[in-house]
Length: 400
Length: 97
Image (cartoon, rainbow over the protein chains, first blue to last red):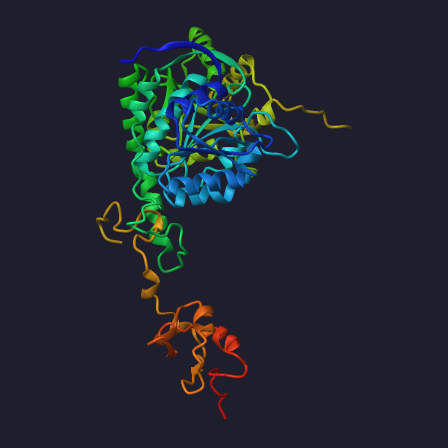
């Protein structure tokens, strides 16, 4: 067990601190709006000699991830950080990093995609990138983000897949919180030395990376990538268990279950809103309502059976989405939950709500109202779907 | 699909090519719809064709251009374009009668 040091940091500072301790070989970044303060803070570390990292200033997010891909293929531990439209601008290279099986770690601060122009919190950026072949870990607070960054290095390098670590924009990224930091040596011992499978600089073993892959072989390589994603789940669990042991923290698990085991009604919600919902769960419990919370952490690979086991048999569930698929079929959390529960022995009635887009706040009182709606609809036999849709938007009476 | 699949599959990870010089395994001659001919009597071995050929299909022996390797010549005709007009050692075959 390590000696921890108390600190008051913002989410951005916490993730940048993790990057300083990891001390990657290469970080490439560009100050697009919206970028994150993470690379700005890290650039200071690099300029002041606090890290040995080669900091590459590129001309776009597309180039930032391209440079990181090149560095990783050359055998370097490489990272970058982004957010929102910055992530969107990386889109092509997201798929290349994962297809080439490069263990890149990238913090992403969840902020909405324009338009209309807005830079505030929601999950539309990384939810859009959920099929890009990256392991996705959503965090609730700065401590979890800091911890997850350290774990992500080990996960990425063992699974040989890139990892995104997410926190809620502004709510976590810019708000200061008390947390515990670990000694540099402990972090470096945990992440270990990067031993790449191959390197473009290994002139005794020349290779080609990212060659053309036509219809005769493309599917075999794609299946290999898909199998690797499946095989990464035990790697995530192992890393979390080892982290809990080494650093004296809780084992984070695939999701965070709060008073869920004996709950009759459950809310599924990603990120900082789970923190808003927890006291509401306690208050409803005090009134005799058996409610619980499931906060997804690992979204890729998607732990479908684990979600289904945790939620099958509940009287009612509400899936909370901080992004919309614009599919007229709920957001990605609701869609995944519905798919996961299809094979479950008992499929509970389910409400899908879209909330908090573009940084719209959600208050504890609203969480309580959502639970009340769930009770009412399940108990009166009305279809919970009738209360699905956008939560907390203005409504206007129909004009006569 | 077979019952048991090898994991990881016996493929290079991410589809990278784990050896050098593997283009020699790819016989690009099959791409050609027509291929140029080389006239050794006219050829002055200026090596312009050898420099320009994208498939290294110009055969050289004893520092002289001696012909075309048709297993690799994909019929692009760059050698024909670059053969000096006064020499014209490389030509497309005559069109059929």
